[in-house]
Image (cartoon, rainbow, N blue to C red; front, side):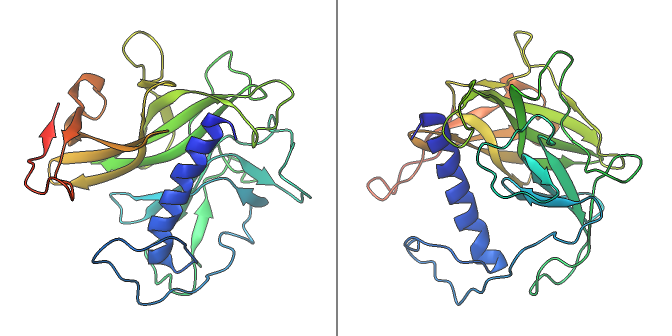
Length: 265
């Protein structure tokens, strides 16, 4: 399996394993020491029967907005009937989409939701836009996760390049991780510029920080993925847009060294 696809699948497996214990789908793998799951049950297909004809989405994460609603974000999104996602032409498909989910009891599944749609309400709207000159048949922008800071929502996204004649499930080139910003009232995002003039805060050969984000007090803790595993960075909430403000965990307690102090560099 190609490295870029393996890395993505490893992260999705980790993320789904972490989330499904909460939402009730089946997960696999051994439990962490001291953690036990009372029980799980399958919730079935979610977000079906929507008004914009979406029939499939790649990946799924969510973040809580200042309104108390949740923004669920997805990668490549299929509309209408299809037999197989393999070798499908991605060019006409939205590269990323989103759903607003109101506060509700989800023990029986997500019942109240709405796709963020185009002005005519006929198609899902792409949240993180392509730049001028980017070709959707060659470039994809996969919204991964994010955070809400006051009245602004932020999305970290993978920018990937498709390889000519190669199915995206077989291989692709990961160009890096970018950051997009939008107002929570409109959720229309703009891609922020990174140092050096690109839009990739972390390049393709670096850990792609932003695959998972969690706020704790004055910091956002930002997980990154690489073939060697998961890594962790942190940044003060108000400085999320400044790449130079991120600190990286270089030492932490382990089973072999339980007395080690966390050290950021």
